[in-house]
Image 1 (tube, rainbow, N blue to C red):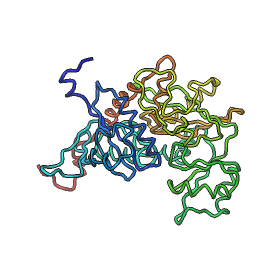
Image 2 (cartoon, rainbow, N blue to C red):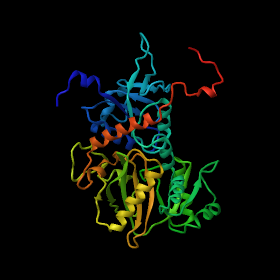
Image 3 (cartoon, rainbow, N blue to C red):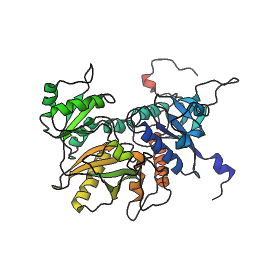
Image 4 (cartoon, rainbow, N blue to C red):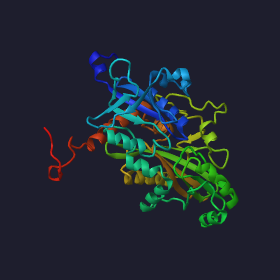
Length: 414
């Protein structure tokens, strides 16, 4: 389809944010590049905004190619370090270069909508969403409140209990004020109600980072320092025998909550650890970049993890998975396309909601492409998310002077 000059001028500019100060930085880069490639270039201009592990923000076309990560000294000459203007005077975002050119003022970079594609700390957990709210930037995905609640596994338990969605019992283990070691007698009291073996994992991370199965208090004590290096709390849960996992994504379409295809990841071991989940191709290369803009019957999703899409499960289990996912999404005023993970004892048929990923790897696009009779392609999924971002921003618009006349204690000028 040919484009007129007017079409090009009227294109919305979408800034895709990825990377970040998180143990899941590298996975976020892969997801962000997939989103950049899959966005409809007939509708949008795109800007990659990379946040490095040290927290620096960069823009530049070199950031569109995976082979350029991590940035070398020569690569750094081809990017511009920026910061976000948080005045919020108009709808949309402004990136300000941090270095002033030799002549004149730094040239701002304007964009209309942000798509944050962060996994884990300082991005998926409500922090960047709160910044966008402050700056009056329309952004895709879950809102600040939902992101913060769902990235905290303990707080998620409170939510699930409140809406009668089954979840495993748990114990929260906080990082000590001094060091990473918890005395065995103290730790044993925390774990005693759960029994052994049990699972210990970070309370705020994803991608199965730091997940351990422990058979006694000595093993629990030994695994906690690794978790506490990256997280200030751990959560312990009973170990589920005959473990099988089911995942489903949820979205709101025309006011109605809908669910994606269900996937059942395959695991050779008892747990999906990080390497198995994200490097199972065997060569460490990980992702095959690029979301498909057309339906692919064997979509690999984020990386080469083997999975069953639309697995053969009982109608009762499928109905429960979808019902409980919708209940959670509705309770949290859900937006975006979070992925909800369930775990089940395959022999007994017991099933529990395990955790919610506000921003799943690859945005879980392969789950939507696999919806039977009505597949949603990655490009269309992103277009819907951008539209939702504008609607959600409009809902929260307030007057330029946010202080009502009856509450004004200071004089106004002009």
